[in-house]
Length: 472
Image (cartoon, rainbow, N blue to C red):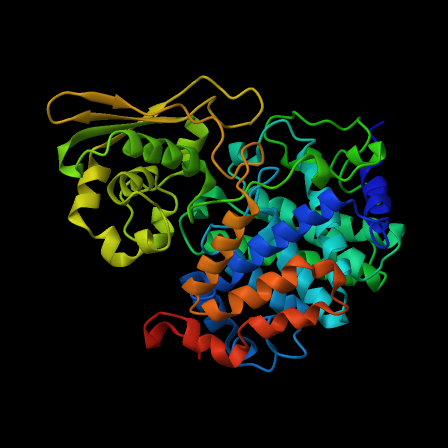
């Protein structure tokens, strides 16, 4: 018989309601929330958020309820949907256990926390519980869901968000297990939509689904007691190759939270994580051999077949497509020495020098698989051939800078947060918010965070799109 995962996970998550969190776990939870909130505010102006808000019509930006970060009385379902989409819109948010945990768990938890006037410590506990639930289910699968064409963020997200919201609603173990079971029926997301505004919508919908699952459980809504592990349950239904572990005890049975063992990986570039090692390789090569771009005759990028399939756009025309193009990522790194917000701007994407380098780029597949990271090559690297035949090769990159095994320091994370708020034209709030988030566990009411975020009435001024695309 499989371990009763749904019930045990309900007990573990319910135990987070009043848990004393170790300092290391608190620090990582604070960092995860900080990173997500920066990406969330920067993402408000992206087309995915604009079109979603337009589709919501009177219930969107101009309606009586806020985005969850700005106006009193926000409705959690709507706030989680829009904020989750915004948090993932730039593809700048963190990565762990196959998906983007922060972009789903933080918007969902914050929406419920604001509605209930929860404390900062409650919010941190919710994040830890959401991370635990997501990681526990994801780690039982031997192959990443990408193999089956599924987006893990949309698939696992409702489960993580439901766990976080269950903590904030202070559900008991039975109700929490039901929330997880309800959430298990709500996951969705296709790789086919990578490079389009529907990809970040996966995160928003997952956040909203998690909030709804917890609310339904709180109202007594029923669900299967074994929805995660049974023959027709989540793990067996979605497994790409049947490589699932249904027998081992949950990680938390060892007494430690998963976040203490594995931190999320922080992104340094606002593009798909599958491109980050190649960018690091290109930047390393450029630093050692700063040759003029016009001397480059060809570029070779070597990475796994999986990552090549995820980076599906070869000649991107939009920022959304550029985030899923290794040709863009490497060419931009070689040409500009960085891949940031400015590099995905329309004028940069049209730059003939960039287009030339992208056209010169060839993808090579490495069959030397990483022994730990599913879907990764053991290393990514970049090689150049110059106009005189000279061959230049980067160092092999096994872990991108920012990966949990190769972390950035706290100052770099604070700078990323400030860059995100500057992108949203709100640089003056950065210092104040950094101070609040640094002592999040001491805040009696996390609604104080609203002070630094835009109200719904201000959002139209933040969205840098043509008038006809602005929500009405």
